[in-house]
Length: 210
Length: 261
Image (cartoon, rainbow over all chains, first blue to last red; front, top):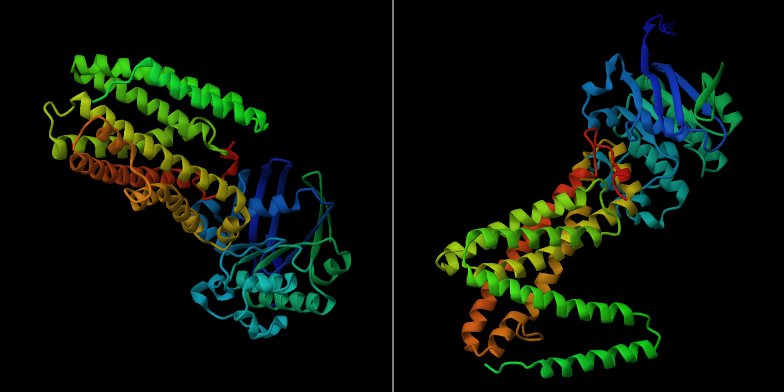
């Protein structure tokens, strides 16, 4: 799959998955180009989350996955998961302090998501689910992944913050030429963010509707 | 030493029966298990009494080894059945037995050869009771530690995986659970050492005193035994929890809770 992009360069496939099969999933084959965003919809339980977990190598499965042509086995698991970043629908935190969750305790840029620096002072459980969800995105981006697997990244957010998150991800995608898989139930959001969208049903990709 | 007659034991048994009647009357519901356990005490201890008498009479390393192995297998089984979530495919038994074998046997052999220095060093009168006490306590530590490990890993699955997703190594992601599990396994022996002599008189020392030993000599043995138990328990718990925390992940560092039943 080769597409010419706006700079006139030849763009290569970023992440490629072949015959992914796991409990209730697949076989699924897909390829996503660098700098593109693929929307993924489908009824609950159709295997969207499972597919993302397989791509991030969190669940056992059959099939091969590669990143920029390099097979997953050539990466150590931590290397792979740093490059192929999964943002789960619900964020979980292992320490009481926000900064403990960022690499080298580096403070992230908060303005783009309308978070105030107060979040660094408060214990995590006092933050709203929306604040935690936005922080989880910043936590993921701090790793500078080459692939973003986003599982309903705006589910708990109000309209303003949905727009901020979409803008931040778009900016990150442009800057890093990363590819994105964006799971959502929101058709209008897909229209805004995705270059193409795929539908899952019963563990399989249904059709390619660009 | 005052010898006990069957009548003396029968009197003590009547006390247990009275306690059983009380719990039955109060509908606590543990009457049957209580009676069965009391009966098991009588049968098992009488049996081991005769076995020990026979082994003490024929000092041979083969008998000592055989008895030690039986004790180890029973302890391994006990560790396994005490897990609310254990590893499938006999892994709990294997990990529990391996870690107990390594720690208990090395501590016991060291104590027998270097500290007590009986001749021969495997003299069953020393070897078997020492092994039994160290093994019994290590078994507690190992089963508490493994139980906490598997329980916490299941409860905190999302937190562990959140760290994996961000590129943390599996052993880093489970590090706090691992240290917590080791701590849980160590607490009983720390408490026992801290309370020894003040709140409780340890059973071994009490037994020696009842049998007519000089209290100070009994205390010396008790200190030795306490230290051996502490070392054995901690080495055993650390290795069992370490093995368990490895088994929770596969070669791609995925959390494999499907390995638990």
